[in-house]
Amino acid sequence: MPGTAIIGLQWGDEAKGKIVDLLTEQHEIVVRYQGGANAGHTVVTNGKEFKLSLIPSGIFRPHVQCVIAGGVVLDPASIIKEIDSLLKQNIKIGNNLLISNRAHVIFPWHNLADRIFNNIGGGEPIGTTLRGIGPCYEDKVGRALAIRVADLYQPDFKEKIENIVGVKNQLFLGLTNNCDNTMRIPGLDVELDAESIYKEYCGYAEQLRPYVADTTNYLLDAVDADKRILFEGAQGSLLDIDHGTFPYVTSSNSSGTGIFNGSGVPPHFLKKIIGVVKAYTTRVGGGPCPTEQSNDLGTQIRERGREYGTVTKRPRRCGWFDAVAVRYSARLSGVDAISVMLLDVLSGFDSLQICTAYEIDGQRIEYFPSLINDLRKAVPIYETLPGWKEEITAVTKYDDLPVNAKYYIKRISELVGKPVEIVSVGPDRLQTMFL
Image 1 (cartoon, rainbow, N blue to C red):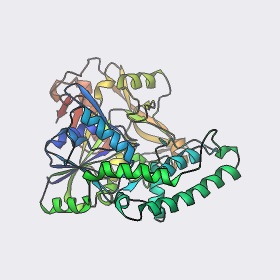
Image 2 (cartoon, rainbow, N blue to C red):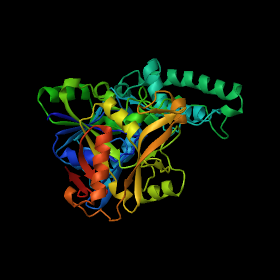
Image 3 (cartoon, rainbow, N blue to C red):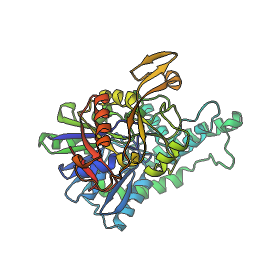
Image 4 (cartoon, helix red, strand yellow):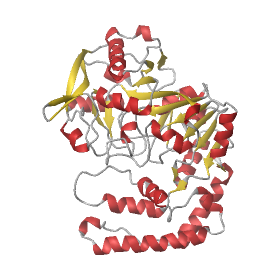
């Protein structure tokens, strides 16, 4: 099976990193193809926890080639910090990491834009991580003010910086000086210095030079050679810029639709897509979450599941499993099988609930609405299932799970319409069952 993809089917944070780490052993190449340093994966191996942001989770397997493809937006300071941190923990990073020369680069003006526009009043904040991801994607689409990794090594790099800084300074000063107080951030310096930015990024360029390559050609050669490639998604399908809960989404195609444009690999190469879900629902940032429990139950799930952002440390909003949303995202991403994560968090409840439909304006619907205002009005219709009291973190065989836990997994499979092939009952590699 040459090409396999791991896709989150909820609002991100589904523990995809663990599944990527486990399946990497069966692959030769692992590819991160979209997003930026706003995503985070946690991998636990031999009791030791590692937190990743940009580097693919396959980095812990020495025989695997890790690729950051052109669909990613790259914060040089962030990835250098990540590389240094892993090296200090005796994780090998050398020619086993490739960074696309087509990837777009995040600059200080992107972070500044994030802060300014996030401060605009009127309505619920989108929930950006303020890492410049969205503004970098904006410049990528706009083209004229975009810089790619390859540009860091070109003779006209300084000229590009000077031209862009000139435009951005006029933009930011105009916005903050001529608009009302919603645009002003006390103490925020909106004056960018081209010379200091140029010197800073020249330093980054030299540190990253050993890793930079034409990853598109590399991956196409790998496809021709029938290499086993694993594609690692970031965020979740419901945050997809085109198909998610817009505008409360990320800035890239985080569903399965983004695999091919982000990596450059043709669609026919991909043979299997595994959708990853938590046994319950979480969401970070703004936007509706129909099954959210803003009560003691939600707090209990959050604390048991340690539901705080890998990158931001923000507390996640928690609630019951939403089968309507996951059924939609599974169809959207074309998944073949499901991996259910953090099942152990639900141990101890007398009963559990799964959302099987919504009621909107008095009408029952079983599809995921396209308009955010409709989703805001959605009242979840629940099916109640019996819980289990046993702790299951030490269970290593599916047959040894409590009867009610197995029924819960079966019901998720029935409602989503896809088989469950992986069940996780803890963060370590060994706490995983393949059905």
